[in-house]
Length: 114
Image (cartoon, rainbow, N blue to C red; front, side, top):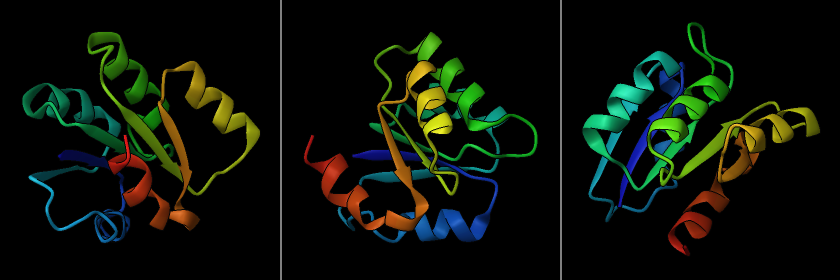
């Protein structure tokens, strides 16, 4: 499995990496949504773990851009903003999963069980 982690916080990216199993082939990190489409194009990960709130391009726009060019892309939104509004917006732009950063431990079982 290959992962692309997109979050503007290095600490959060490291925290997100922690529950991912050690047998992962590769993990690439981006610090903003503006880097996500190019990184996806170059890396073709199995999963993108995407934050919503970032400085230049937010994760909803980045998800929409990735899914438009790569409809088969699997994107999981990870956010501290767990609300119906954000869940709905993530669904509209094509996110496959939605996780609260408060529950990062479930990512391991959920994404690897697919």
